[in-house]
Length: 117
Image (tube, rainbow, N blue to C red; front, side, top):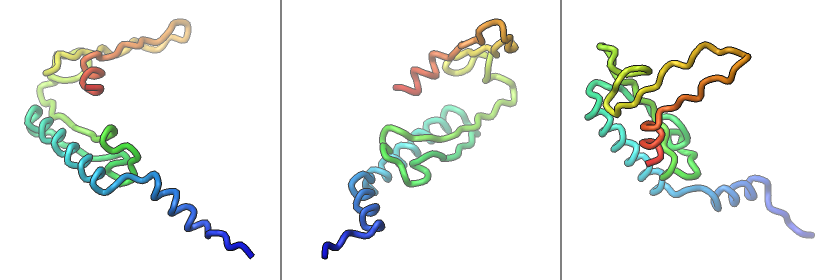
């Protein structure tokens, strides 16, 4: 009689083939901390939070996918839509939605370039 592996063994074997190493997760976290440090130098008093798959420890591509949130102090209203900021990135509030017209697709090119670079 043939002996088949248990479901647990099949799942564990499959996971072992696709999971990333601890070294990869550690490197991703090191890079994430470096990004936060750079943001903290640029935006003094900012706060951050880690989220996403690297934070959860279940990332499949941790070196190319790091999620974090940053709250930038804005007591003078310097940053945000319609205001000049350090990257000279402006984004106007979209006009109120009108079902008879297409909604605005305005984007901030500087943010997109920074995110992909």
